[in-house]
Length: 126
Image 1 (cartoon, rainbow, N blue to C red):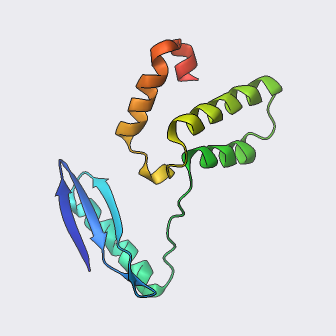
Image 2 (image 1 turned 180 degrees about the vertical axis):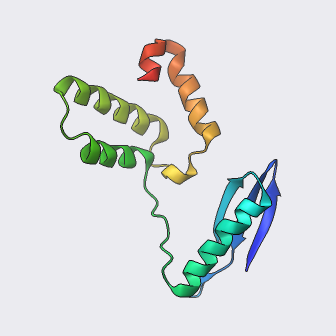
């Protein structure tokens, strides 16, 4: 059974569960209304009951970006590839091995603000 908490102006759900005798709750927040959180929690509980729930893998933002680059941008010019590799290095230097799901809008905005301090607007937009 899920529980719901209000965190600031947003809602979060927590689904209690045990995996191999170890307590591993499923939590997700950022919902505008309690009803939105309830709807998703019901779907997750249903998947758990049917045995089809798959947990989100912890993958670093930089690793995700690298995978995206390999999958979706394989046919690009060397100039564009170098720009993407520069972006990869910037992401890796700033975020390190923080899983992508742990990077909030606020953390990402702080990154953009820091990055834009000594760079042109066009560079930041790219």
